[in-house]
Structures are given as C-alpha cells and as structure tokens.
Length: 144
Image 1: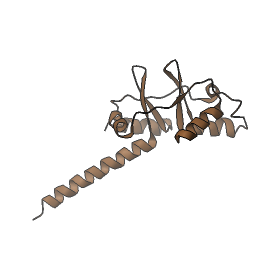
Image 2: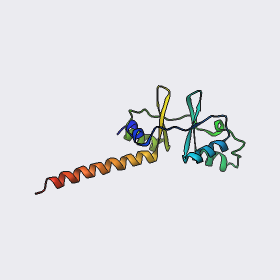
Image 3: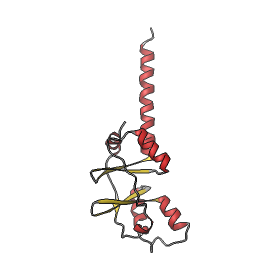
Image 4: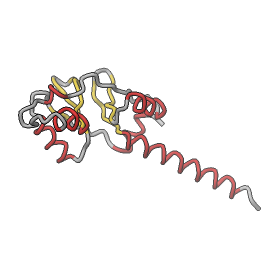
C-alpha cells in the first residue's frame, strides 16, 4: 500500500498556520480541527510542523507563555516528508527511527496531505484483515 492509497481513504485535507501567529492561536486551531499536529506554511511552502509534543516540551515544561511565543520559535523546521508513491513500510521505518508521528506528503514542493501514525497503523490492520479473509476464503473454498 502506498501513501497515495492512504490519502485516498482518509482524505487530503491539510490544515496549516503561519509562523508569525502565537502558539496559543495554533493550539486553538488544532483543537477546533481535532488534530495533533499542524503544518507551518509560508508563501505556499512547507517550512515547519507544530505538534502537541512541541507545545508540551518547549512551552509547558519550560513555563513559557503560549500567548507570547510565536510558532516559528518552537516549530520543528527540519520536516521529514514522504511522497505519494512511498509505501507503508518506508513510512513506518521513518516514523519509528525518527520518533515522529506525522508525515506531510509533498511532491514538487506541493503539499498533498499529511498522514499520522494512526493512519499507518489502521492501514496495516486493514491489509491484515483482507489477507485473513482471503486465506479463510481460500481454505474454506478448498474443503468438500
């Protein structure tokens, strides 16, 4: 299964914020959309990603104010991305080895979507269910 197939099932909606807004404003946006990370985009280019983990580690634990800190100050700016043609195994390896939970999908500098660890796990479970059903059908069909 490819990233493009995951996006086809879950949708390609992408939420983003500007780097110049406050962390608080970004958190409000994330809460309204019920998402754990949001892309940081400037001039239609992906320049960062802000996650709940960034907030917890860089604001809450350091007793900073989310209303006085700007997104660009705490966002991850070395964003790891995937292409629509990348497969599930590659995404799992990236997420595990880099300890990240979200992968923006980018091709030719165009943001096409974002997948989460939950999307990857769900896709793996769906593939396993299909395999089990196929094998069950194969075995049952072979009996007299």
